Structure formats: C-alpha cells, structure tokens
Length: 232
Length: 101
Image (cartoon, rainbow over all chains, first blue to last red; front, top):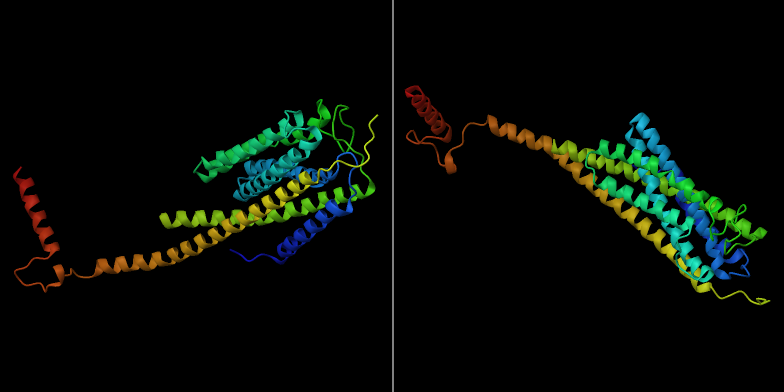
C-alpha cells in the first residue's frame, strides 16, 4: 500500500482538530436552550451528520451513474466508500434523534414521516451491502450496485423534504415547518455559529474518511486481482 | 399559565448522545484501521507467493529434464527395471492385445 500523501495526513489532523472545536462550540460556547435544556445540544451533531450522510447517498448515486457510463471500476470503489460512510453517519443521526426525542416527545420512536423515511433510507443502504456480498463476479457486483445506488439515492431527497411536504411533528429549524411540530426553537447568533461550524466540520470529516476509504477500496481490489492471478 | 423558571434537566440525554457519537466513530475508525492492516498483510503474503511461483515452476521443469532416478535410492542393476522401462513394457503389451483383437 502506498504511503499516505501529505494532504491526506493534514486532512486527518485537521479533522480531529475541527471535531474538537465543534464539540467545544456545541457543548460550551452555544447557550443552553431554555425549553429543552441540555439535550438540545445534540441538535448540532444530529443535523450535521444527517446533512453529510444524505449528500453522501446522492454522491453514491452519481458515482453509480458514472460507473454505468464509463465502466471504470474506480467509480465502484468511490460508490462503496460514499455509501459506507453515509450509512455510519446516518445511523448516528437516527440514534441522536431518538435520544433527543425521548425527553422532548416523550418517546424514543414514532412513525412520523421524517423518521419513517430516514429508517427506510438506512435499511435501503444496509441491503445494498447485503446485495454486494451475495454476488461473486466483480463486474456484475459493480453493475448491480450502481443501479441500486441510483434508485436508492432517490430516498435521500424524499427524507430531506419529508418535514417540508408532510404533516409532521419533526421540527424544521431552517425554513418554515409544520405548525404541529414539537421541539422547534429560534437559534441565537451563538447557536448559529456552533451549527454552521458543525456542518463545516462534518463535511471535512466526511471528505477525510471518504479519501481513506477509497484508498482501502483500491487496496482490496489489488488484493483480489493478485489472488486471481495466483490461482490462474 | 405555567411559567418555566429553569430549563429541565436533560443533561443525561445529552451525555448519552455525545457518548454514543464518539464511541461509534471510534469503532468505525478502528474497523477501517483493522481492515486496512489485514489487506496489507494479505498483499504482502500474496506478493511473496507470486514471487515464489516462477521459482517453483522452474524447479518443476528442471525436475522433468533430469534422467530417471532409481527407485528408493538404489543403484539400477542391469536386471532391475526403472518405472519408465516398466511403463514402456506395459504399453507394448497393451498394443499387442489391441492388435490381437
């Protein structure tokens, strides 16, 4: 395996430092919300992980389209990397949301349109890896995966717009949401700084993890090819 | 109307949320590291295997060009047949039987 490039090393360190700063801003710098209390601080990482995860799912769909057009296996590696990291981030989003909902909605989970679409999106991409594991031929696996991510990526905008299109209790912090939403709040300038910084931090972390995962994907392909050449 | 003086104590949920986030991120990072390390080890083993294959193939070819070795290390006496000689005789017998048929 090739040694890490200097840019990637810098990005690794920057991600750690940014995460530390984002945690400080979310936990200490941002003021406490008066109605919800300390649990509102979960919101900064909840939204940031959701945003990057949904973008990652769309990016995976785009990589799938490019793979089908070019048939270049590197786009399959990109697609898998995007899905894997987005899956982890989106799982964090769902669990953080559930933890926030317990004291605010008085329940861990409810079949609200946003929560339902989010759960469906997560399960779609869990199934993506199950599908890939079931196919041995690399070309066929990549082709099926590409088609799957293209269709699966439609769930990302549906999840994003669910709180703007349907009647829901999930709050909309940016923009206007449904009047029945519970847990809405007005952001102060300090809250906005913490929120924007978290969005930026998670975008950088996503890029860093994405790059590292692509390197690992290339290595896996190399090992697979070497195994085949030895067996022949 | 009820006026809330102090915010409710929901700090335990906040701690649980951030703890979950950091634990999951650490687990994912460790999994990335372990998978990369395993792949690197596989790569090293496979590369060494690939280097050994031409050497082994060369040995096999060299083994084919060598003259017939005596069975169990004994020196071949004029009366003792080697495996190759045995095989050639059995071939001749087979040919004779087919001719008869």
